[in-house]
Every structure is written in C-alpha cells, then in structure tokens.
Image 1 (cartoon, one colour):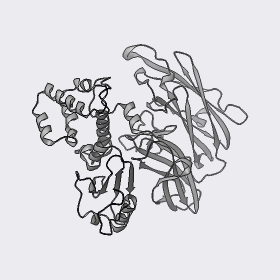
Image 2 (spheres, helix red, strand yellow):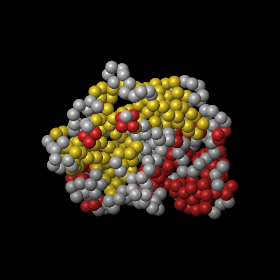
Image 3 (cartoon, helix red, strand yellow):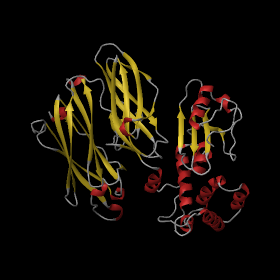
Length: 485
C-alpha cells in the first residue's frame, strides 16, 4: 500500500545558491501534476532546500562530513497521517561544501486524492541534534485542470539512450531531466531560465493553440515577453517546456508567467525568480580569468603565484587597454619580468592607491570572465567571449546603462543596442547576421570602434526606426547627428 501511495525520490544533495540571510531556515516548494491514468490523483513533487551552514561537521580535514536525517509526513485536513509513520532517510555530503549560500536539495514525490493536505518535513543535524521543520499545504485536484503548476529550473535536459540516469539533484519527467529548486536564483553569469509544465486535454482530439512567456517586474509590470508560439496537445495532455535567456536583466525580484491559449481556454501559470547583481556574483564566485592565490588583494599578490601560461592569459585581453607595441614588449620578457610588467601596468590604473585592493583590475578581470561566459560563439568556442564585439565592449565599458534587444522578425536579424550614459555618452548597435549568436558591431558613435557604412541595409526600415526611437535619433532622415549624444 505504501509503495502505491508514496514514492520517495532520494538523490544526492547538490550545492546551489541560497538567498543571503537564509542560512538557518529550511524552504520548500511543491508542484502538482494531474494523473488521469491513476484514478485522477494528483502527483506532487516536492523539494526542500537544506542550508549547509545550519549543520555542524563531523571528522576533520578531507574526511569531514555533514550528516543530517530527513523525515516527511503527509497529513489530511483532520490531521491524520496518510502513512503509518514518517518516512526517513539520511544524507551525507563533504564538509567542504559548507559555506555561505550553499544548500542541498532533498526531493520527494507522492500522490493524493482530491482534498487539502499538509506536508511536514523535518531535518535533524546528526552532530548538534538540532531539528528544523518546514511545512507546505498541498491541494489535490478535484477535477482535471487546464495545466499543472509551473516549475522553473537552472538546468534541464533530455535523456537519450546513453544517458538515462538522473544526476545528483535531478528529477525525471518522462524523458526530461530537471534540476528542481525552491526559488530560481539567476546570476549575470548564469542568466538562462528553464520552464516546465504540463497542459491537459480532456477531449479525444488534438488541440492546437499558442504559448507565450513573460517576465514581470514589481507590481506585475511587463519587462519582456516572447511572441506567441504554436503548440499542439494530444488527447490526455502533453509537456510544454523551453528556456529563456535573461542576460541583461537588472538585479531584482521577478515573476515568470506562462500563458497558454488552448481549445478556447486561456490559462496562466507563474513562478518567482531572482536575478543577482554582477558585483555580488563575482564576489561570491571569485570569478577571474585565472586563479590567483587566496586573499590576493594587492597587484603583487594577485600575479605572484601565477605560472607563465596564467600570466599570458591575464595579459592577452590587455590589448583592449594598451597599445599593441606595448603588448609586444611584454611577449619578449622573462617570467619574472612579465610579472613585474603586469604589476606596474595595473598600479598605473589604480584609482585609489590608498587601499591595498585595485578595484579597476578586479572590475576588468571580472568583466573578462563575464564576457567569456556570455559572449563566446559556436560549440567549439574557438573565439573567446572577450574577443567578440559584444564581449570587447563589455570588457572596456562594463554593463550598458540601457539595452534594447529584439529577436528576429519582419525581415531583420536579431539585434541589440547598448547605450552608455555615464562618462562620455556612447551607443553600440549589434546584429546577429549568422543566426547562431555571432553578434557583430554594425554602428556606433564611438570613434575608437568601426561600424559598417551600410548598416541600415542589414536591418529593415522598421528596425532602424525602432533603434532611432530608443536612442532619440532620426536615422532615416538622412542625418547622422544625434539628439542625445
């Protein structure tokens, strides 16, 4: 009876980011799916985040571990347990995973009949004996819904014949493997969101319709929205899934909303997400193109432990900041001389010599790391991200103050417009003429960069007009002047 009612999915914990200030509290989310082939029961998939900082390690050195037990109960509206006793299991992870904002994911699933239920999960630390509980209310569907709850994830993949086993932290939906989280937390280095839900069709005929995805800000304000995409759902139901690249989304709290129009019925499902700031992301991940010694705040300490190959990696993007002949001088130096060259170069860029840190160096290499992550082109990655047009501009000037992004449509290729209002006002227009993400700079007012004279012909009059409205310029009137710059 127990096997038919509740199946526990025990997976190895996986470390993911947790919100700041939530190191002593559990959090949980449950998503529901209708199962017509199981007497109309509701399949519930729940997952609990366990902050590692609330646990005490046992052992020492490389052998130290974090050990905790998890127990779960499902109670009906009268408080009666649907199971003879709580289900329990134990999780062990290396203590090296313990740190700020690191959590483990404990997934489980069970099925319920129509009604309201209470899911209680208790986590007990094996060393301190401390117990922490989290609860969630779950309602079993009374009849077939138009769609399931919406699940957001930082990673989703389709299992193939050679890869059918879920990895630690993954859950399976048919042939789709999803990494569940209680609340999705994106970063500028990981800005892609995956979404997953089921749509249900109670008729015996296939239904066709559309689906669109929107990002909403505070108060439900629309930030961005995809065009309606055609969908088809066969008898019984089907899976709706996809991904959205939210690169450039400002730091803050958002809602991802999926709208499905199917068989004359309009259904919306939503889930919350968070975008972290670049500075906080780089600080937490200690992102850099090379690995400096721990605590290397000064320029000397930063470059001191690097091998010659690492020094060359750090020197390569300096072509964006120095004359080519100066970089050729670097290439002819000994290892020690290369190290001194880099130290002296960055000392000259330090805008606050009174502090041991060189904020300008940290900003630049953080921007290089971001550009390499976000702007690389092609599967082979022959071209580093900072060497692309967008990556080069990002490394030189940082994130734009305003950004216009348009997908392909109306005969125009995908294009982006970056506007900088701090310092000397600049704008940059990029177009993806390849269709594979290879955005090229086609027009700018920056005299140090080269555009394409025929850039208007690459786009369409509507796209040029759209860009002009964004920048406050009349590009179609024959004037190359600017009302803003």
